[in-house]
Length: 138
Image (tube, rainbow, N blue to C red; front, side, top):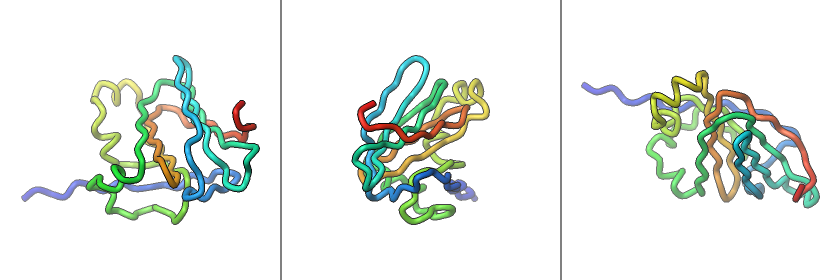
């Protein structure tokens, strides 16, 4: 008898200011040889954005809500917090589906998920992201 695959676990990341994910969106994504930078809307602050920055090799994907909601594993609610923006995720299909070579050479790789009302950014990275508030468009 086959056992059920383990469902992913979500670990909320506290971000300041707190962001209601339903009111946020991905403003910009920049990828260079040295870093990946994602700027997100801070609801009720038209002058500033929340910048999430990774300073190493990463694997990313951007999805809107529809494809994310159709992943068979998303039925779990373990660790999900209503309207929360940032998570560290364990055991998700996104991480499991990457090549064994990439996973072994980038250990320990961690899966981060940033959820907004319109898009979801998944990032696999061996280093933690930096968070900062920046002026929009900078």
